[in-house]
Length: 89
Image (cartoon, rainbow, N blue to C red; front, side, top):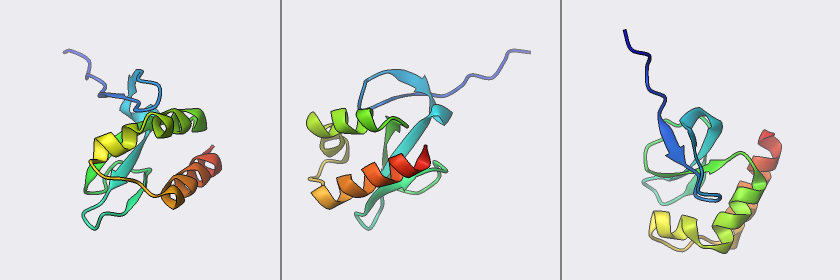
């Protein structure tokens, strides 16, 4: 019997491929709200980030989350994401 494959996802900040469980999912829900998804089960468009706040800063600087979601992201949302990442560690 072959061992199960671990799903790999790319961090939008640093660009490294990591197991899905090591990353945090950022979701743009059906209502357009952007939030962190700790469970990985929320409906909507998702992008993955390392649990490191530096990766969020890199993704913000290069506008990778805007590209992933196809829309502009307000500064208040980035501040909220930074706070949630800092509290999560």
